[in-house]
Length: 219
Image (cartoon, rainbow, N blue to C red):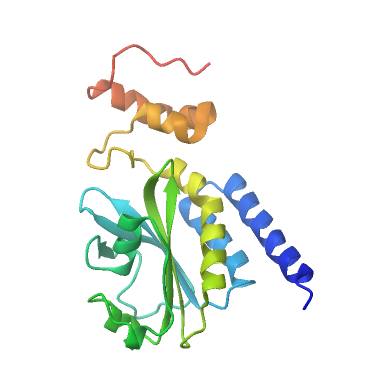
């Protein structure tokens, strides 16, 4: 079977996601843009983006794509870092696919997912410079609807938006338990342009006890 058309289609969707990551300016718009491209190559129904929240040491849902009316998994919902699939993926920095959730119950929230009509679930981590910053989860209603190949595509597309999402986080994911924004980490993630974008955050960092009190030079 000739795989060239399929590979070319996937490559085109990856290019679109990359373009979204480069041009969109909010977490939601980047995530939704990725989801639209992903929908063309992976048969999922709902997707969620969860960012690490150091205030609560958990992962907060910040974006949902697809039907979720009446779901307990809504924007703002906090997922436990130790007792959810999202938390497990965040901690272990590796994707997790379960193709028949009803027979693979593992976390307390799994039953809620099944009751909402989803049986195939895949979660992948967003990793920047070796640090988990977020998790993308996709769900499908039928058993075995998501395959290992689909999971690889979800991870590849999520990788395309990791740096963009990282640049929009108003905290330092490397130093997880502080609200201060670390200038060296911001610079490492996005270079001079990102540092300039976060000029006010960096100024606050210095005023609150950052390394040195000299004015920052963005030239």
